[in-house]
Every structure is written in C-alpha cells, then in structure tokens.
Length: 161
View 1 (tube, rainbow, N blue to C red):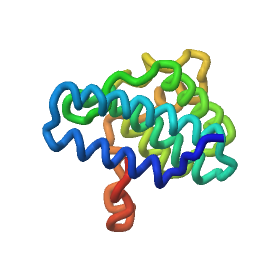
View 2: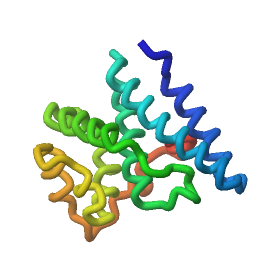
View 3: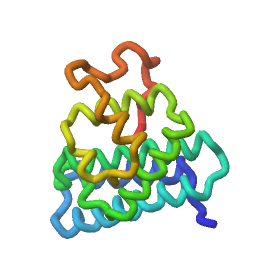
View 4: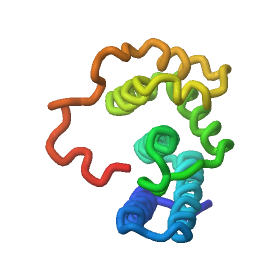
C-alpha cells in the first residue's frame, strides 16, 4: 500500500503551486506539470486504497477539481498541464459510482454544479456510460451562480486544492 495522506498530498500540491507563481523557467514548469500529473495519480491511489470515507471523498474532490482546472486554466499559469487520460477517466468512474450510492456531500454537489457552468468541458472527457454523472451535469441550471456564497464559515476553503 502506498504511503499517501491528504495532508502530504495537499502540502505537495501547495508547494507545486508556489513554484509556479514564483515565475519559474520553462524547464522547471515542465517538471511541475509532471509532478502535478503524478500527484493526480496519487490522489486516485489514495482514493482506491483508503478505508476512510472522508479521506476518499476529499481525494475524489481534488481529483475532479484537477480534471476541471486543467481544462479551464492554462498550465503555464497553474502548473497543471495535460493530465493522464486514464486517471481522468478512472476518477470520473469513481465519481459516477459514488453518485449512484447517493454519496456526494453538499460541497461536492455545488463544486460539480459550478464546473458544469463552464459548458461541456467535462462532458467530452466523460464516458457516455457514466449515466449518473452525465445526468447530473446535464440537469444543472447554468443560468444561476452555484458558488456557496455566504454558506461557508470564513476560512473554510483555505488551503483547499
């Protein structure tokens, strides 16, 4: 079993982000992008190997965030480049399974709703057999704001992925 924890992966992600914003060279940026791709895979491995449902949910949230973030922001600004498509696909499969079990919390629902408002970016990377996920995204009202404005305690999103 791998020796990953949310804390270790979160710290690694924060360190990568700090490297990107410090105006690194192209070579260094390439290394950061490689590290993000590896981190992305490690979140999937953590999800698959953890027996703690809260850790699994958080790891999956971070996987799906990185999937979305890699599509909406350029890698030279974020350090998140092209992610491994097998890992992306597997993360959506895990998400679909969780949705079928009614396992999403409020935060995850609004995250996905916000991502759905970016058009069909996510849909084109999701296997058409993942019906729960596709139905959820297709039924989001994209004419309203889905951020949790004034719904979370101050600082609740500090140091999030």
